[in-house]
Image 1 (cartoon, protein in one colour):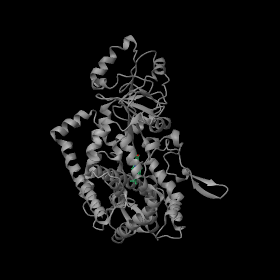
Image 2: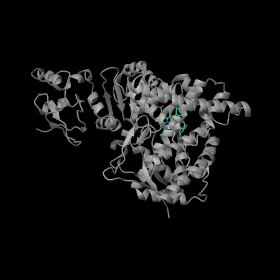
Image 3: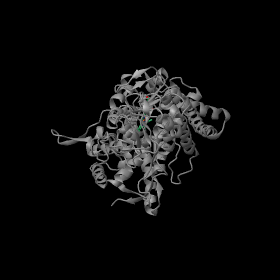
Image 4: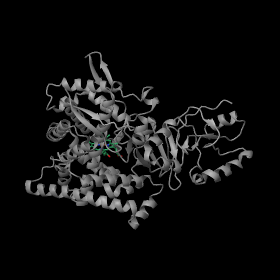
Length: 553
Ligand code: HEM
């Protein structure tokens, strides 16, 4: 018997509704309903028997007994999940979601990439279904074409409200628009120039480099992920609120705020991922378990936020009000003086600036360790700059090869690996998927960066050159961006990350400062060669990134 061709995933209990393949399968099996075995490795052909279970709305009569029996024995809980059949592979298995909860991003990525149109529908036992896509046409549709139909939505907003409140990440419509407009000056050229030439430069030369130099002298192991988070945290507080938390000092002080922040984001992500918001709402009402923990973490975060707001208000009172100074002063001088709201702004911008660039750089340093020729090219580019110690804005912008290497690193390890919107109306996606009001449609940059369809056969290679093109007239190499819907690492459309340019300047300046003088050598312990990618709202390297630092000759 010739088996139908189908790309399968290798997850335990991974149940796929493949009605679009059934006609072929039924022909091959003369009308019998067939159950398929879970392959040990991803295969292009399914093998007969056992766990993969195929159903169809109109099952032939003689199979009707087998189907309910199998459902009763093995799959009863899943009956809730797969009552709806459309012409797309559906994953609707909370057992598999649960068993894969520690690698959910990778699990969903495999599902998206196994689907012929890169879109899957996740059925939930309670609550609306969720669409997950890696299809650029669908990404464009939800982020731009139907911008007003796809919003943050009530579930996401409620789950994150305790931490982000009414900050820019957690609001839609006019509440979002005015925050976007009021924060724009922070991202203009003047501010970016100041950011890279003063804020980043000072943190780099006075804090990061001395810490790395000490680690190199003493041959000590440091957690580079932690160090980069501290760097980014100091940076964002300085540029956005004119406040220096001095988190990156030689003693690497215990930052209870950082721990609370991490806990809060993780626990809120768990809220988003629960099958129904009722579960966490009941726990919050009873103040038990994760909700009790979250309450404690939020209170710690608010303490720092209130300190930042009060200090800024006090300074503005005593020294006068210059709204051009920073983001927080801009909001206060525009008349937004409510403490709770200003705290939401503070927490949201820390969230935006702390975990994203640090995640990108952590994976970047890992990838260039694995690809020494890329490292050599970057070092050559840095050494061609006349002003090695204090690179100015234009010089940092011109670091084309480094820029391409960072883009390539974020293709494989995007700091925000999955992000979504809720439909406020019924809709049909460009690939035919039907979306009902209240369903979430998520796009999956992690999966998209690993798609052979989008990046070619060599998608798994770390190759910055794929972003570069030779200009025949000027005989120089220039950076060629991919369209934002194929590479939605910074999101796309009207809500595209406002801090994209700021992020690149910071990352490139750090890379130049570090690699010019040091070699970063990961501590690869026996049996755990590859670091593990984990993610809540942003991505991380599990257990940190332990490295030693060597002086470059
Ligand atoms: C590699 C670094 C970064 C990446 C990959 C990144 C990615 C993203 C993504 C995916 C979003 C959309 C989030 C959502 O709406 O669900 C976003 C929004 C945003 N980002 Fe970034 N970001 C980065 C760095 C930064 C930095 C350094 C800032 C500076 C403060 C920043 C400021 C913002 C702001 C304000 C928004 C909200 C935009 C809006 O809703 O209109 N980002 N970013």
